[in-house]
Length: 146
Image 1 (tube, rainbow, N blue to C red):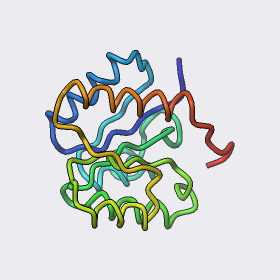
Image 2 (cartoon, rainbow, N blue to C red):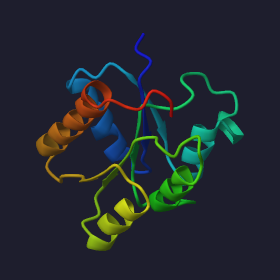
Image 3 (cartoon, rainbow, N blue to C red):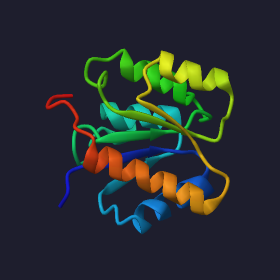
Image 4 (spheres, rainbow, N blue to C red):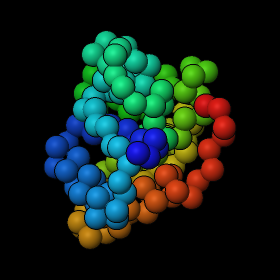
């Protein structure tokens, strides 16, 4: 089984379904874990709360992170990840419907590896997500130790 995992942090169930469908259509057979708010994302990544006993790799290969999340925003999650040595180098892609310049700038300021706007058109959305999956799981060369 492939040990590379994607963590999808998405509160919109329709966007979640579209993302999962697009990854499967692109033949991404990797494990994809989904959490639906910022606090769940941190609990998952740091193995706390409801995820204290989760199985699977210590960290995912990449995090696809929405900005507009309940409890903690995606940007707050990203700031906490970058402030902790265990997750400081974890690849994080902001995947959002926001087209606000301030969101783009703030994402990079707090350490995003990439900022991708979710296309409205499903075919374009599917292609974008497929490219993200292939790049981060197959093309990108991460550091040996995260």
